[in-house]
Image (tube, rainbow, N blue to C red; front, side, top):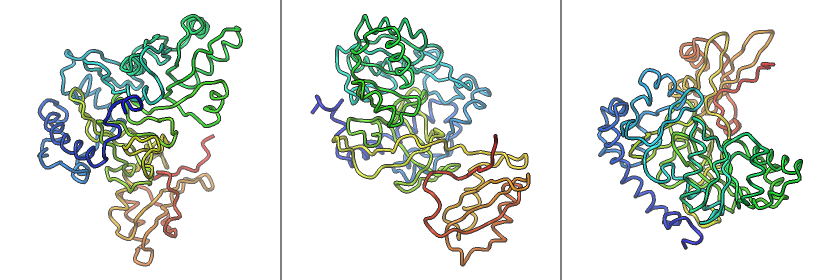
Length: 411
């Protein structure tokens, strides 16, 4: 089994995996509350012993990545969310924002090894790693995952394409890790220079979209390319296998899909925001809202890994927009729905008519019992803006995670 899978946990009975996660959940909550100043405040009124199910987890507040810039500015450097003191960490990074992220001590702290293994990397392979090692953690995240698979890493970073082509030509790496677009740049530079970089037969990519046409472009050149979904704060979230059928959720995290602007889980298959709870003792992020949209895919991967899958990155969850000079947030749309039982689902559509912004709340639910005037008054009270309320037949609003649909021409 272990020649096919990174470890035996990837093929566990799903019920055993879930039982293990739910047993670990109260322990990590207790640890976070006791050791982290930030979660000491957030979880002050929570008894961790009672949080032993996903339903119970869904009652806890969400920590939003989009709020970290302000939170960290108030309480440098990590908004008090770290359970291990900064002087005991291995590294500190700065991502755009700025947002500061830690790296604790220990091997493969971001749990990236299984993504590299699933992409075909094996002990002794040389990996040309082209994520940045400068200030941001991307290079180190991939570096540690490749080395966890026993690979030798060339810490190439980004830029200097001519020097990188020379290194690939000389060192003959078996694989590449980084963004797909930069590998394409390197291949085109190699063609220009007449250099041979055909040793690269596989690639693990992240950080940007991988459309089928681009994956096919690499396949035509003999490179098997898989992608993974990771972040500086959470580490590995999900990864592809050779089945290329969705992205398998990483072990040791609890992933939820919630309605944007809320912490309310949606049904499997419905698009919503990715929220992750980690079991990381150094930086135990609890219900951490990534700002990314995805959905749970039906069934298990044909590759034999038994964890749930997500459909991959499907857009951004933070759809906040400005209407008539006022910001309107997805959480406000959720509040309107919450106050009216006749509404089961809603989307706020923003258009421009005769140089004026117009808001239309498109609803699904029980139109016969709906009071459109009352819903309109709620919208005016919550959003501080007036708009039109209309009902659509059930099932006609698209399943794309959009809560606010800004259709204005901003050109």
